[in-house]
Image (cartoon, rainbow, N blue to C red; front, top):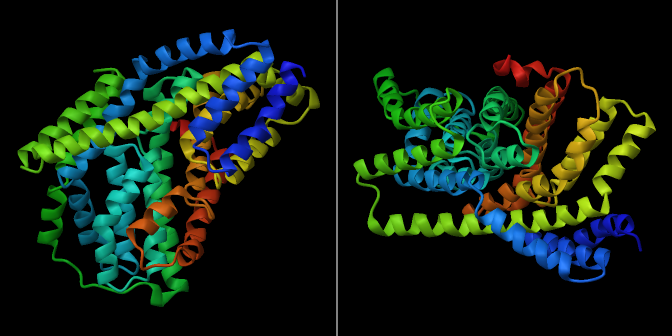
Length: 437
Protein backbone atom coordinates (compact mmCIF):
# COMPACT_ATOMS: atom_id res chain seq x y z
CA UNK A 1 0.00 0.00 0.00
CA UNK A 2 1.40 3.40 -1.00
CA UNK A 3 1.92 6.20 1.56
CA UNK A 4 -0.93 8.15 -0.08
CA UNK A 5 -3.33 5.23 0.38
CA UNK A 6 -2.17 4.79 3.96
CA UNK A 7 -2.87 8.48 4.55
CA UNK A 8 -6.46 8.21 3.33
CA UNK A 9 -7.10 4.97 5.25
CA UNK A 10 -5.81 6.58 8.45
CA UNK A 11 -8.94 8.76 8.67
CA UNK A 12 -11.44 5.92 9.24
CA UNK A 13 -8.98 4.27 11.64
CA UNK A 14 -8.75 7.52 13.61
CA UNK A 15 -12.54 7.84 13.77
CA UNK A 16 -12.91 4.23 14.93
CA UNK A 17 -10.43 4.88 17.77
CA UNK A 18 -12.35 8.01 18.76
CA UNK A 19 -15.69 6.15 18.72
CA UNK A 20 -14.07 3.47 20.92
CA UNK A 21 -13.54 6.32 23.41
CA UNK A 22 -9.77 6.50 23.03
CA UNK A 23 -8.48 9.98 24.03
CA UNK A 24 -8.17 12.09 20.89
CA UNK A 25 -4.52 12.85 21.59
CA UNK A 26 -3.71 9.15 21.95
CA UNK A 27 -5.72 8.29 18.80
CA UNK A 28 -3.78 10.79 16.69
CA UNK A 29 -0.51 9.67 18.30
CA UNK A 30 -1.12 6.00 17.40
CA UNK A 31 -2.23 6.81 13.85
CA UNK A 32 0.82 9.01 13.42
CA UNK A 33 3.43 6.50 14.56
CA UNK A 34 1.59 3.62 12.86
CA UNK A 35 1.43 5.51 9.59
CA UNK A 36 5.11 6.47 9.74
CA UNK A 37 6.07 2.88 10.52
CA UNK A 38 4.18 1.34 7.60
CA UNK A 39 5.08 4.14 5.17
CA UNK A 40 8.82 3.79 5.75
CA UNK A 41 8.93 0.07 6.52
CA UNK A 42 10.60 0.49 9.88
CA UNK A 43 10.74 2.35 13.17
CA UNK A 44 13.65 4.71 12.42
CA UNK A 45 11.45 7.49 11.03
CA UNK A 46 8.82 7.58 13.75
CA UNK A 47 11.46 7.24 16.52
CA UNK A 48 13.34 10.24 15.11
CA UNK A 49 10.06 12.13 14.69
CA UNK A 50 9.00 11.27 18.22
CA UNK A 51 12.26 12.62 19.62
CA UNK A 52 12.26 15.85 17.61
CA UNK A 53 8.52 16.60 17.89
CA UNK A 54 8.43 15.97 21.64
CA UNK A 55 11.29 18.38 22.24
CA UNK A 56 10.04 21.06 19.82
CA UNK A 57 6.49 20.87 21.20
CA UNK A 58 7.27 20.99 24.89
CA UNK A 59 10.03 23.60 24.56
CA UNK A 60 8.12 25.93 22.22
CA UNK A 61 8.22 29.54 23.41
CA UNK A 62 5.01 30.36 21.51
CA UNK A 63 3.07 27.65 23.34
CA UNK A 64 3.98 29.03 26.77
CA UNK A 65 1.13 31.45 26.24
CA UNK A 66 -1.32 28.60 26.92
CA UNK A 67 -0.48 27.89 30.60
CA UNK A 68 -0.34 31.65 31.24
CA UNK A 69 -3.88 32.19 29.94
CA UNK A 70 -5.11 29.13 31.85
CA UNK A 71 -3.52 30.43 35.06
CA UNK A 72 -5.05 33.84 34.44
CA UNK A 73 -8.48 32.21 34.33
CA UNK A 74 -7.79 30.40 37.61
CA UNK A 75 -6.78 33.63 39.35
CA UNK A 76 -9.75 35.51 37.87
CA UNK A 77 -12.08 32.94 39.41
CA UNK A 78 -10.37 33.28 42.80
CA UNK A 79 -10.58 37.08 42.78
CA UNK A 80 -14.36 37.07 42.35
CA UNK A 81 -14.30 38.71 38.92
CA UNK A 82 -16.95 36.32 37.61
CA UNK A 83 -19.33 37.25 40.42
CA UNK A 84 -18.71 40.98 39.95
CA UNK A 85 -19.38 40.70 36.22
CA UNK A 86 -22.64 38.86 36.71
CA UNK A 87 -23.89 41.21 39.45
CA UNK A 88 -23.13 44.25 37.29
CA UNK A 89 -24.88 42.79 34.23
CA UNK A 90 -27.81 41.61 36.34
CA UNK A 91 -28.32 45.03 37.93
CA UNK A 92 -28.72 46.63 34.50
CA UNK A 93 -30.57 43.86 32.64
CA UNK A 94 -32.19 41.64 35.27
CA UNK A 95 -35.56 43.43 35.37
CA UNK A 96 -36.17 42.90 31.64
CA UNK A 97 -37.96 39.87 30.26
CA UNK A 98 -35.28 37.19 30.19
CA UNK A 99 -32.92 39.75 31.70
CA UNK A 100 -31.14 37.47 34.18
CA UNK A 101 -30.28 35.09 31.33
CA UNK A 102 -29.04 38.05 29.28
CA UNK A 103 -26.92 39.08 32.25
CA UNK A 104 -25.40 35.60 32.33
CA UNK A 105 -24.44 35.92 28.65
CA UNK A 106 -22.97 39.38 29.25
CA UNK A 107 -20.98 38.07 32.21
CA UNK A 108 -19.73 35.13 30.12
CA UNK A 109 -18.52 37.58 27.47
CA UNK A 110 -16.70 39.63 30.09
CA UNK A 111 -15.15 36.59 31.75
CA UNK A 112 -14.14 35.20 28.36
CA UNK A 113 -12.08 38.36 27.88
CA UNK A 114 -9.82 37.31 30.76
CA UNK A 115 -10.07 33.54 30.56
CA UNK A 116 -9.62 32.20 27.01
CA UNK A 117 -11.26 28.82 27.65
CA UNK A 118 -14.84 27.89 26.78
CA UNK A 119 -15.15 25.05 29.28
CA UNK A 120 -13.70 27.14 32.12
CA UNK A 121 -16.05 30.03 31.30
CA UNK A 122 -19.09 27.74 31.25
CA UNK A 123 -18.14 26.01 34.52
CA UNK A 124 -17.25 29.22 36.37
CA UNK A 125 -20.30 31.22 35.33
CA UNK A 126 -22.59 28.28 36.09
CA UNK A 127 -21.54 28.44 39.74
CA UNK A 128 -22.41 32.13 39.84
CA UNK A 129 -25.49 32.37 37.64
CA UNK A 130 -27.40 29.10 38.10
CA UNK A 131 -28.58 29.90 41.66
CA UNK A 132 -29.86 33.30 40.53
CA UNK A 133 -31.63 31.86 37.51
CA UNK A 134 -33.37 29.30 39.72
CA UNK A 135 -34.23 32.00 42.26
CA UNK A 136 -36.13 34.04 39.68
CA UNK A 137 -38.04 31.13 38.18
CA UNK A 138 -36.07 30.34 35.02
CA UNK A 139 -36.66 26.83 33.71
CA UNK A 140 -33.83 24.33 34.03
CA UNK A 141 -33.39 23.64 30.32
CA UNK A 142 -33.41 27.32 29.38
CA UNK A 143 -30.93 28.18 32.14
CA UNK A 144 -28.45 25.44 31.28
CA UNK A 145 -28.71 26.10 27.54
CA UNK A 146 -28.04 29.81 28.11
CA UNK A 147 -24.93 29.12 30.18
CA UNK A 148 -23.65 26.48 27.74
CA UNK A 149 -24.00 28.93 24.86
CA UNK A 150 -22.54 31.80 26.88
CA UNK A 151 -19.54 29.64 27.70
CA UNK A 152 -18.57 29.44 24.03
CA UNK A 153 -17.73 33.15 24.18
CA UNK A 154 -14.66 32.14 26.18
CA UNK A 155 -12.82 30.97 23.06
CA UNK A 156 -14.09 33.69 20.72
CA UNK A 157 -13.59 36.92 22.64
CA UNK A 158 -9.83 37.50 22.89
CA UNK A 159 -7.61 36.33 24.41
CA UNK A 160 -8.35 32.82 23.13
CA UNK A 161 -6.29 29.65 23.50
CA UNK A 162 -7.74 28.19 20.29
CA UNK A 163 -6.83 31.32 18.31
CA UNK A 164 -3.28 31.02 19.59
CA UNK A 165 -3.10 27.43 18.31
CA UNK A 166 -4.53 28.49 14.93
CA UNK A 167 -2.01 31.32 14.67
CA UNK A 168 0.88 28.93 15.33
CA UNK A 169 -0.39 26.33 12.85
CA UNK A 170 -0.90 28.87 10.04
CA UNK A 171 1.96 31.24 10.97
CA UNK A 172 -0.34 34.23 11.43
CA UNK A 173 -0.04 37.27 13.67
CA UNK A 174 -1.72 36.56 17.03
CA UNK A 175 -2.46 40.24 17.72
CA UNK A 176 -4.27 40.61 14.38
CA UNK A 177 -6.31 37.46 15.03
CA UNK A 178 -7.33 38.81 18.44
CA UNK A 179 -8.39 42.09 16.83
CA UNK A 180 -10.37 40.27 14.12
CA UNK A 181 -12.22 38.18 16.73
CA UNK A 182 -13.42 41.18 18.72
CA UNK A 183 -16.41 42.26 16.59
CA UNK A 184 -17.61 38.68 15.87
CA UNK A 185 -17.41 38.08 19.63
CA UNK A 186 -19.63 41.08 20.35
CA UNK A 187 -22.01 39.91 17.61
CA UNK A 188 -22.18 36.51 19.27
CA UNK A 189 -23.12 38.02 22.64
CA UNK A 190 -25.72 40.30 21.01
CA UNK A 191 -27.14 37.39 19.00
CA UNK A 192 -27.52 35.28 22.14
CA UNK A 193 -29.34 38.11 23.91
CA UNK A 194 -31.71 38.50 20.97
CA UNK A 195 -32.26 34.73 21.04
CA UNK A 196 -33.12 34.90 24.74
CA UNK A 197 -35.62 37.69 24.06
CA UNK A 198 -37.29 35.64 21.31
CA UNK A 199 -37.27 32.47 23.42
CA UNK A 200 -39.04 34.03 26.42
CA UNK A 201 -41.66 35.55 24.15
CA UNK A 202 -42.26 32.13 22.63
CA UNK A 203 -42.10 30.41 26.04
CA UNK A 204 -43.23 32.96 28.65
CA UNK A 205 -43.24 30.39 31.46
CA UNK A 206 -39.52 29.72 30.99
CA UNK A 207 -38.42 32.94 32.72
CA UNK A 208 -39.54 34.77 35.83
CA UNK A 209 -39.23 38.47 36.63
CA UNK A 210 -37.44 40.57 39.22
CA UNK A 211 -37.70 44.14 40.47
CA UNK A 212 -35.55 46.88 38.90
CA UNK A 213 -32.43 47.86 40.84
CA UNK A 214 -31.94 51.53 41.86
CA UNK A 215 -29.46 53.40 39.67
CA UNK A 216 -27.14 53.99 42.62
CA UNK A 217 -26.72 50.23 43.02
CA UNK A 218 -26.29 49.78 39.28
CA UNK A 219 -23.38 52.22 39.09
CA UNK A 220 -21.89 50.76 42.24
CA UNK A 221 -21.97 47.29 40.69
CA UNK A 222 -20.48 48.67 37.49
CA UNK A 223 -17.55 50.15 39.37
CA UNK A 224 -16.75 46.72 40.83
CA UNK A 225 -15.82 45.33 37.39
CA UNK A 226 -12.84 47.66 36.97
CA UNK A 227 -10.33 44.78 37.47
CA UNK A 228 -11.75 43.00 34.41
CA UNK A 229 -11.44 46.10 32.26
CA UNK A 230 -7.93 46.71 33.59
CA UNK A 231 -6.70 43.19 32.84
CA UNK A 232 -8.38 43.03 29.43
CA UNK A 233 -7.11 46.46 28.41
CA UNK A 234 -3.61 45.70 29.63
CA UNK A 235 -3.33 42.29 27.95
CA UNK A 236 -5.14 42.79 24.63
CA UNK A 237 -4.36 46.50 24.36
CA UNK A 238 -0.71 45.94 25.22
CA UNK A 239 -0.39 43.17 22.63
CA UNK A 240 -2.16 45.19 19.93
CA UNK A 241 -0.14 48.35 20.63
CA UNK A 242 3.12 46.44 20.57
CA UNK A 243 4.05 46.99 24.22
CA UNK A 244 4.81 43.31 24.59
CA UNK A 245 4.52 40.04 22.72
CA UNK A 246 1.45 37.79 23.15
CA UNK A 247 3.42 35.48 25.45
CA UNK A 248 4.59 38.41 27.56
CA UNK A 249 1.03 39.76 27.57
CA UNK A 250 -0.29 36.46 28.88
CA UNK A 251 2.31 36.51 31.66
CA UNK A 252 1.38 40.10 32.52
CA UNK A 253 -2.31 39.10 32.60
CA UNK A 254 -1.63 36.13 34.89
CA UNK A 255 0.48 38.28 37.21
CA UNK A 256 -2.15 41.04 37.19
CA UNK A 257 -5.08 38.79 38.03
CA UNK A 258 -2.96 37.09 40.69
CA UNK A 259 -2.11 40.44 42.25
CA UNK A 260 -5.79 41.45 42.24
CA UNK A 261 -6.80 38.16 43.88
CA UNK A 262 -4.04 38.64 46.47
CA UNK A 263 -5.10 42.23 47.18
CA UNK A 264 -8.66 41.04 47.75
CA UNK A 265 -7.34 38.37 50.16
CA UNK A 266 -8.87 35.68 47.93
CA UNK A 267 -5.63 33.93 47.01
CA UNK A 268 -4.71 31.59 49.84
CA UNK A 269 -1.76 29.21 49.70
CA UNK A 270 -4.11 26.27 49.25
CA UNK A 271 -5.94 27.91 46.34
CA UNK A 272 -2.62 28.96 44.78
CA UNK A 273 -1.51 25.33 44.92
CA UNK A 274 -4.81 24.14 43.44
CA UNK A 275 -4.59 26.75 40.65
CA UNK A 276 -1.07 25.74 39.68
CA UNK A 277 -1.95 22.03 39.71
CA UNK A 278 -5.12 22.60 37.64
CA UNK A 279 -3.15 24.72 35.17
CA UNK A 280 -0.46 22.04 34.90
CA UNK A 281 -3.03 19.29 34.33
CA UNK A 282 -4.89 21.22 31.63
CA UNK A 283 -1.62 22.25 29.99
CA UNK A 284 -0.41 18.64 29.95
CA UNK A 285 -3.66 17.51 28.33
CA UNK A 286 -3.45 20.23 25.67
CA UNK A 287 0.23 19.61 24.98
CA UNK A 288 -0.31 15.86 24.57
CA UNK A 289 -3.07 16.56 22.04
CA UNK A 290 -0.68 18.93 20.24
CA UNK A 291 2.04 16.25 20.25
CA UNK A 292 -0.33 13.61 18.88
CA UNK A 293 -1.52 16.01 16.19
CA UNK A 294 2.07 16.91 15.26
CA UNK A 295 2.97 13.24 14.74
CA UNK A 296 -0.20 12.52 12.79
CA UNK A 297 0.17 15.62 10.62
CA UNK A 298 3.81 14.70 10.02
CA UNK A 299 2.63 11.36 8.65
CA UNK A 300 0.00 13.09 6.49
CA UNK A 301 2.66 15.43 5.11
CA UNK A 302 4.82 12.41 4.25
CA UNK A 303 1.88 10.71 2.55
CA UNK A 304 1.13 13.87 0.51
CA UNK A 305 -2.57 13.80 1.46
CA UNK A 306 -2.94 17.60 1.98
CA UNK A 307 -1.12 18.39 -1.26
CA UNK A 308 -3.07 15.83 -3.28
CA UNK A 309 -6.37 16.96 -1.78
CA UNK A 310 -5.56 20.60 -2.55
CA UNK A 311 -4.62 19.77 -6.14
CA UNK A 312 -7.78 17.68 -6.58
CA UNK A 313 -10.08 20.44 -5.29
CA UNK A 314 -8.45 23.07 -7.51
CA UNK A 315 -8.62 20.70 -10.48
CA UNK A 316 -12.35 20.12 -10.06
CA UNK A 317 -13.10 23.75 -10.80
CA UNK A 318 -15.25 24.27 -7.71
CA UNK A 319 -15.81 27.90 -6.81
CA UNK A 320 -14.02 29.22 -3.74
CA UNK A 321 -17.33 29.82 -1.96
CA UNK A 322 -18.52 26.26 -2.63
CA UNK A 323 -15.35 24.81 -1.12
CA UNK A 324 -15.60 27.12 1.90
CA UNK A 325 -19.23 26.13 2.46
CA UNK A 326 -18.38 22.42 2.35
CA UNK A 327 -15.53 22.90 4.83
CA UNK A 328 -17.74 24.83 7.26
CA UNK A 329 -20.46 22.17 6.99
CA UNK A 330 -17.83 19.53 7.77
CA UNK A 331 -16.88 21.43 10.92
CA UNK A 332 -20.53 21.75 11.97
CA UNK A 333 -21.07 18.00 11.66
CA UNK A 334 -17.83 16.78 13.20
CA UNK A 335 -17.96 19.45 15.89
CA UNK A 336 -20.75 17.34 17.39
CA UNK A 337 -18.27 14.48 17.85
CA UNK A 338 -14.90 16.06 18.71
CA UNK A 339 -13.65 18.84 20.97
CA UNK A 340 -12.59 22.17 19.48
CA UNK A 341 -8.84 21.89 20.07
CA UNK A 342 -8.65 18.45 18.46
CA UNK A 343 -10.66 19.63 15.47
CA UNK A 344 -8.34 22.59 14.90
CA UNK A 345 -5.14 20.55 15.25
CA UNK A 346 -6.40 17.73 13.04
CA UNK A 347 -8.02 19.65 10.20
CA UNK A 348 -6.20 22.96 9.76
CA UNK A 349 -3.04 21.34 8.29
CA UNK A 350 -5.34 19.67 5.74
CA UNK A 351 -7.88 22.41 4.96
CA UNK A 352 -5.71 25.51 5.17
CA UNK A 353 -3.55 24.56 2.14
CA UNK A 354 -6.75 23.95 0.18
CA UNK A 355 -8.29 27.32 1.10
CA UNK A 356 -4.98 29.10 0.45
CA UNK A 357 -5.19 28.06 -3.21
CA UNK A 358 -8.60 29.73 -3.67
CA UNK A 359 -9.38 33.32 -4.60
CA UNK A 360 -11.72 35.18 -2.23
CA UNK A 361 -10.79 38.64 -3.49
CA UNK A 362 -8.58 39.56 -0.52
CA UNK A 363 -4.94 39.39 0.48
CA UNK A 364 -3.55 36.02 1.67
CA UNK A 365 -3.12 37.40 5.19
CA UNK A 366 -6.68 38.70 5.42
CA UNK A 367 -7.99 35.45 3.97
CA UNK A 368 -6.10 33.43 6.59
CA UNK A 369 -7.41 35.59 9.44
CA UNK A 370 -10.99 35.60 8.13
CA UNK A 371 -10.93 31.83 7.62
CA UNK A 372 -9.55 31.36 11.14
CA UNK A 373 -12.40 33.32 12.71
CA UNK A 374 -14.98 31.38 10.67
CA UNK A 375 -13.44 28.06 11.73
CA UNK A 376 -13.35 29.19 15.34
CA UNK A 377 -17.06 30.06 15.25
CA UNK A 378 -18.24 26.81 13.66
CA UNK A 379 -16.05 24.80 16.03
CA UNK A 380 -17.60 26.82 18.85
CA UNK A 381 -21.06 25.78 17.60
CA UNK A 382 -19.96 22.17 18.01
CA UNK A 383 -19.45 22.80 21.73
CA UNK A 384 -23.20 23.27 22.16
CA UNK A 385 -24.53 20.97 19.43
CA UNK A 386 -26.19 17.73 20.60
CA UNK A 387 -25.41 14.96 21.18
CA UNK A 388 -21.76 15.45 22.16
CA UNK A 389 -21.42 19.19 22.82
CA UNK A 390 -18.72 19.49 25.49
CA UNK A 391 -20.29 22.57 27.11
CA UNK A 392 -23.60 20.74 27.45
CA UNK A 393 -21.92 18.01 29.50
CA UNK A 394 -20.12 20.56 31.68
CA UNK A 395 -23.39 22.32 32.47
CA UNK A 396 -25.16 19.00 33.04
CA UNK A 397 -22.57 18.14 35.68
CA UNK A 398 -23.18 21.53 37.32
CA UNK A 399 -26.97 21.05 37.34
CA UNK A 400 -27.90 17.41 37.90
CA UNK A 401 -31.55 18.32 38.50
CA UNK A 402 -32.16 19.28 34.87
CA UNK A 403 -32.43 16.42 32.33
CA UNK A 404 -29.96 16.94 29.52
CA UNK A 405 -32.80 16.40 27.02
CA UNK A 406 -34.33 19.71 28.17
CA UNK A 407 -31.00 21.44 27.61
CA UNK A 408 -30.82 19.93 24.11
CA UNK A 409 -34.21 21.39 23.18
CA UNK A 410 -33.44 24.90 24.40
CA UNK A 411 -29.88 25.07 23.06
CA UNK A 412 -31.05 24.62 19.46
CA UNK A 413 -32.26 28.22 19.58
CA UNK A 414 -28.68 29.34 20.27
CA UNK A 415 -27.29 27.04 17.58
CA UNK A 416 -29.62 28.78 15.10
CA UNK A 417 -28.25 32.14 16.21
CA UNK A 418 -24.72 30.88 15.61
CA UNK A 419 -25.54 29.66 12.11
CA UNK A 420 -27.08 33.03 11.21
CA UNK A 421 -23.89 34.72 12.45
CA UNK A 422 -21.70 32.42 10.36
CA UNK A 423 -23.72 33.25 7.24
CA UNK A 424 -23.33 36.98 7.93
CA UNK A 425 -19.57 36.70 8.39
CA UNK A 426 -19.22 34.61 5.22
CA UNK A 427 -21.25 37.08 3.14
CA UNK A 428 -19.60 40.17 4.65
CA UNK A 429 -15.91 39.50 5.43
CA UNK A 430 -15.43 43.19 6.25
CA UNK A 431 -17.24 42.61 9.57
CA UNK A 432 -14.36 40.39 10.66
CA UNK A 433 -11.58 42.44 9.05
CA UNK A 434 -12.90 45.89 10.00
CA UNK A 435 -10.32 46.56 12.73
CA UNK A 436 -7.45 45.47 10.46
CA UNK A 437 -8.01 48.06 7.71
